[in-house]
Length: 49
Image (tube, rainbow, N blue to C red; front, side, top):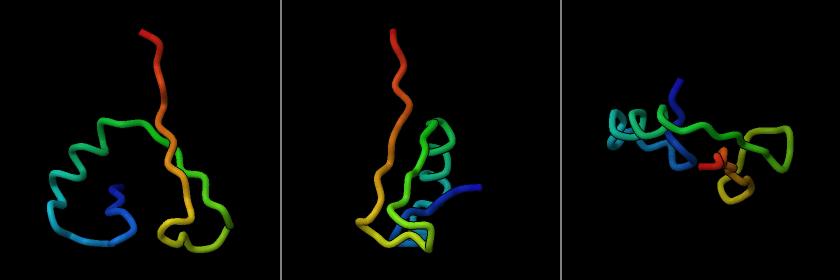
């Protein structure tokens, strides 16, 4: 599965998927309904080096 982001644009589809498939992240929505642009926070995993 590949998320296209809040704009739902198909531009650069392959590039976006390649980039996102290399990252681990979780989304926490402010409400349990359909996400609304600007109302969520994306959190990336942080690793110690």
